[in-house]
Image 1 (cartoon, one colour):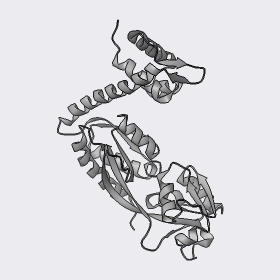
Image 2: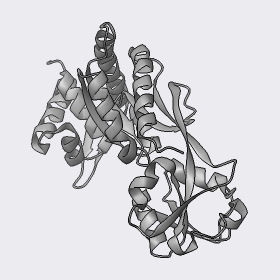
Image 3: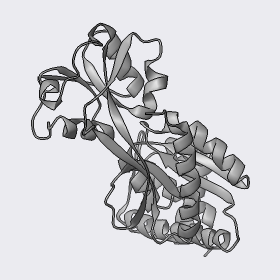
Image 4: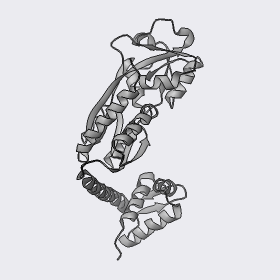
Length: 301
């Protein structure tokens, strides 16, 4: 009986996560036939079927489900062994897989990457943009090293380090720019434009308007801050955006941007990583560089 290879385990792990050979192959950057063959050879090495192959989707067998849990743990241990070796050096080096949520990545990423390229030139940075829930899942699974998200995430297995706090701004039609800034009560009576379900920024906006458990007069959803601003410019309603996004998203759009009176709605942005990561110490130093980059990129209040 041949022994499973690490490559086979990684390919099977991708199939288990994506439930699809094509998507798993794309994630692994190989052809689908090559990935399928490696999984088949793994099944032959183990002497058991791991997946039920369908026309559009694959399903794990009962053995495959248990194998997927154990394979995930094996791969995390292998990755942590590499992290332990990296942590033994004076400086953080090698591959760094960093996640960012969509309401942060477009506005913070350029300055963060530029700063890290200067302070940590030996890093090979890979960026993943996704919603918080997906980033937390990938952190827990060892597929990301760290992530920049809105805090708190309140996951017991993660360390959270605040980087900065930023306010939310009101965006409305340019013709309404001279009108008084509405408070939470008035916003509840307006057509409020929000990001779609799953974005933490949506939840933060709803919390400011005290709308959890209730609904405003009318809500329209969008998939990005850019779309929200364009919807405002078209006269469809009003929205809130984080301060870091204002300069990029509202220029030449025919909208007015205003601050709310104190206490202004705000969010705390921070870095998170697994408490068990051997790179926890270097990540604390890395967070200082990220915080400096973020401070330099943020607009003056």
